[in-house]
Length: 108
Length: 113
Image (cartoon, rainbow over all chains, first blue to last red; front, side):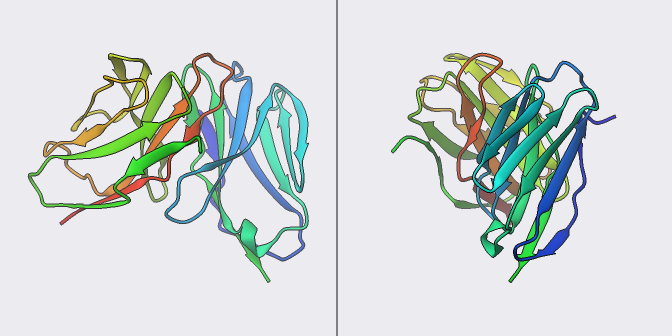
């Protein structure tokens, strides 16, 4: 079983839609969770960093962690064409564990 | 500007040649990492270093070598022993300690001709 599972998509939504991106994980010891955005041929950019369970909001982005279900989510409100990218989830254990990424396209 | 720089952005290599990818950071981070990214496979850890003059193998270290002579620099050599080196290589860094997030450089695209 992989440490982190992420649906690769692709996901295509109209501009203005609410996007929900999700990951599940197997190690209950993970306490630090990250979401990265990666544009084509660029390095991943850290979007959100959260500790333990709960929600964290930053502008149009909300990260949610449910440790009891081993499930994390990233919500994007009022999605824009510039949000079109691959989104990677990551967790910190004794090293960093990454999902394979979800490809998102926001259609104008 | 604080950040992580990688050079070159694109690199072409003939089979049988060794090449070295550069990674420099001015974030004063203790830990540095090298990942390989292939389509559909996510990020795979090649090597990491928590402190100067020390480094550890990751999941796919075969055919690669690194050095950490300075805190700000962590070059990766892709040797001729690496069977399938064409990939996107990402360098990252973080502060020491389990609660710190990781930041990435812009990447180097290596193509073997």
